[in-house]
Image (cartoon, rainbow, N blue to C red; front, side):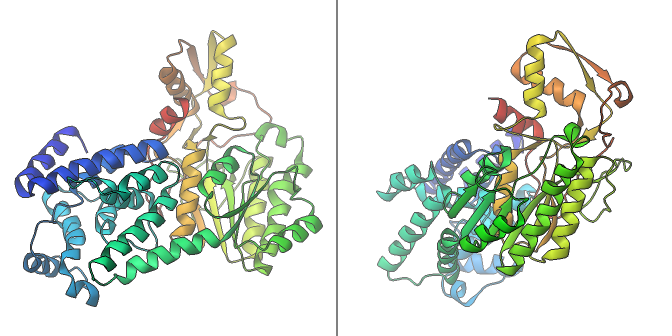
Length: 464
């Protein structure tokens, strides 16, 4: 959404909302932006837009809200029928679609849920709900500063405080509690009580997962604490812990070395996943496992959907495909998440490699005929949490940042963002000899989940 449209929306709201309500909307935008910048990983334009228009129907009277609800075919439960002012949220979402042409599902959902939360809330839902409570209207209530302080460290903890404060205020005014508010609070508390086990906890993805699941009853093991290829010890340790959720971020990821270490790679990426699936089924745990774009041969220039048949062309890809097969064979309660071209703070990745090479090489040669989608580890970790919390159906998911590129373009963007004057020569895969054959197009197509932000935006955040 460009600035011109935002200004047009501001002008409309200024004309149609009361002075206090319009002031509150602007403050919600500021608060939401502040939270988004602290926690990162979300498109700021979506945050601004949802914050600005969340209360666009707030000043309509009950009669008008009921008429519009019927017009837009909004379901009205028995509680809302007795408290029609709650309809301003879903009515506002429908009006924003009609008046401003907003069709983004995440934005519309955040508007709908800012008044009455749902048990399964997205990252944007949480930010807008909290901002609506924290932001002045125009007075600031005492608890807002406390919740904002908590929110700067943990959105979920702040959400729980906000739910409690909201319920206190409703009870104080002798009004009934909406069942969804109670359910949302209870679901959040239930999440905090769940035991989560993260394997590969010190890796690039594992370290991000630890941060995302910090409010759960978290156990995080790396390879020093537990060798996942040792079936006996693996079973013993996990059966003692009895986690509700097992997240396997442990993997052998060096594609080149994998060609010379086939047995080890197949044990870690393949057989160990089968062990985990058997154990997860035994204790009725949900198993989250990560796979790769390299399970595909790269011959399909249009990319690969979740249902596409894998056909790996290197040892690493074959080992990950074996892990996928053993996972699906041994348990039904799984999330198999394929991702690609990952970068993050921990571990080795393409971004770090390019920055290191730029220190010693005046001119670099980078392949320009291999296409894929870069993925920021932090974004992947957050999407994993949302997948679990929103109770998505078990199965295969493709999670990457938006936009496809090749390694040459990726390198150019890295150096442009860091303002490093490096000469890069584009070359073909044939000119760059490697042990492992790479797929020429391993673009993962996501057909099941909301799209993540673009890879360029995520890369800029990572580099800065």
